[in-house]
Length: 277
Image (cartoon, rainbow, N blue to C red; front, side, top):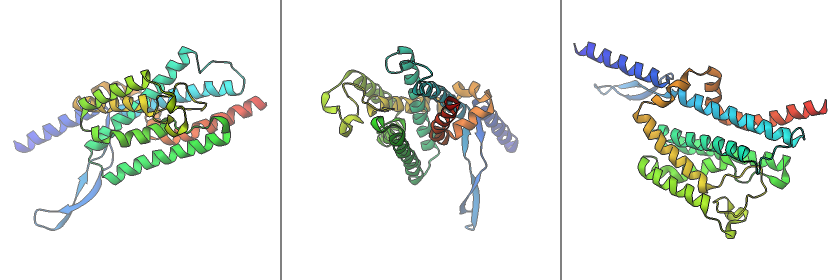
């Protein structure tokens, strides 16, 4: 009876994970001790959320499409006004918001999986290193408008600052809303420089290819923390439909940082070759 009940519970859990788009990864053996005191191993479960990977993949596709349009203007093919046209400004805001929300959701998942602090610091270090590569590359391509605090810079710093709120979804939402409101309404000329401009509150957008200050964008990441807790409580039901999207989207989502670093050089190179012809 007990065995049958346990089997039924495991089957039900498996169905719930499948409905939510949770894909199990191979289990890694972890050293421990058996009841008799002898060394033993047990499997430590590690999972990916297929719907979340697909959502991140959709954000990547949207970003690539946006940058393709931006690059077409750079080569003089179009004359779209990315700096003032409300449609382009809205598209940029939505794309940026999606990345920061997903970063907050992923932070909650990492916390629930009890990842060691060194893994968390390594993750942030990789993002920070990628941010420096973006700055270096933009300096080579656009020395007058290099990226000194873009989306990767913002994500790396925001993850560090938000850590105390990873387990406090209500407080994260309140602080997040306050950060967004403050960053969207307050401005002071004292922040109109690179020394303080990364915080936010600049009176005008600086000359740079990408500018994502902590105010208001850290607030969006904090809302992602709140959303992450809500998704966990509902077994990611809201993302279940996304798990049925084409597999390449999930692949893009799993390797989003590499795609982010490589897509612009590839786009610029291909467009340059096309324009030369």
